[in-house]
Length: 96
Image (cartoon, rainbow, N blue to C red; front, side):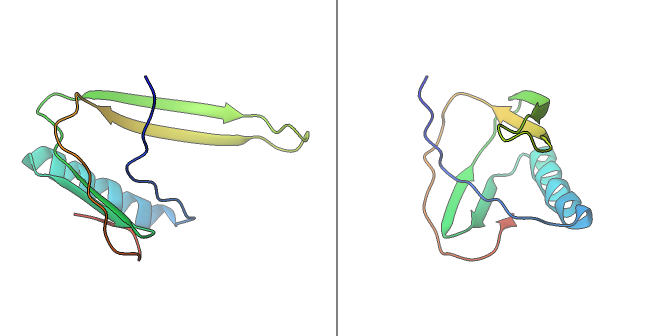
């Protein structure tokens, strides 16, 4: 199935700041609230259902130039499409 990226944000952050974002997501999920994300001139609001599919993945990407590889941890929620995203203002990342 082709992928259409509705929102993407990436920048270095300290672990405490990342933990705050993840806590906000966890709190919103637990309350059954919408996830509204804004950053880099993009925004999207999504309403995860009560039982989305949860995927956790740890990866190692090797460098094609022989340098050190890159490690990552990914957390993903998936569900059947329910609502479209909407665009927003440029600025920092916020998760409400």
